[in-house]
Image 1 (cartoon, rainbow, N blue to C red):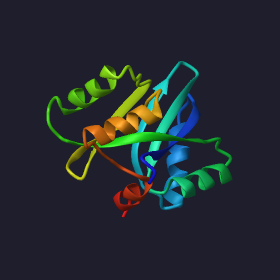
Image 2: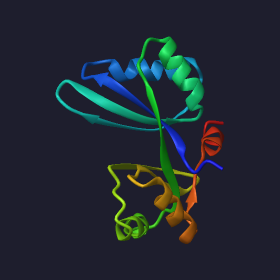
Image 3: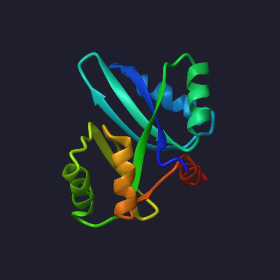
Image 4: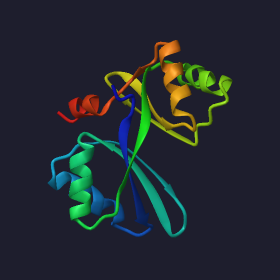
Length: 145
């Protein structure tokens, strides 16, 4: 079973309306945006997004002439409690696993941590060892309903 979700990454020109164009494409395709984060510079940004139907989203965006890349990222389902994320991230630090980026959102009354690591196999071992729950693309489809 796949332990990751599909994240869409889109380079955005740093101008008015660039993000609206992308979201309009998703709306027209009736695809639910679940989470989105943008890291910007003065000239462009990288929009990382999670949506209910990533395969359809990629097709719709490409059809609209928008360049998009897909990557697999982890999405851990945690109790929404102060310090819970810090505790979980210490498991990765203890194993010398780097997390280049992370963002979060709330769903199902839980905190969802979305992140990438530099060691996939060790990360999956940590999930098993500490009985961590993760989301899959199938779970995301339920969020879009």
